[in-house]
Image 1 (cartoon, one colour):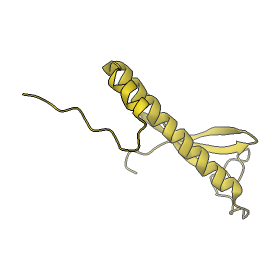
Image 2: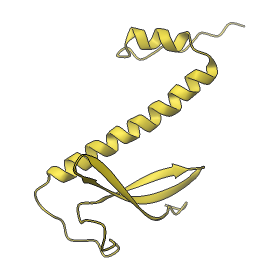
Image 3: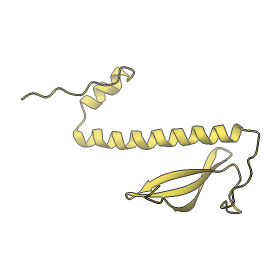
Image 4: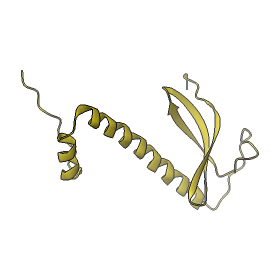
Length: 107
């Protein structure tokens, strides 16, 4: 029985496809893990940029700690198969995070 390799997305550069095709399964899994984390980071950065660009300051949430600015957003991070909420906000060129609490698995 012969299996066909997966078809790469049309918009993926040929160099990337060729590199992945020449890589070991372990390297491809490492790339997949890194790509997922990088995509989440870039999406988070875009959200933070967008919220920083908004001129209106929303009302401060009741559960927002005093040392977290009102412009902070909540992000979920997965660490060792556990999910946690973090407050995140931009301070100049860097992104700052502060632990909020575990994610309720029923949510």
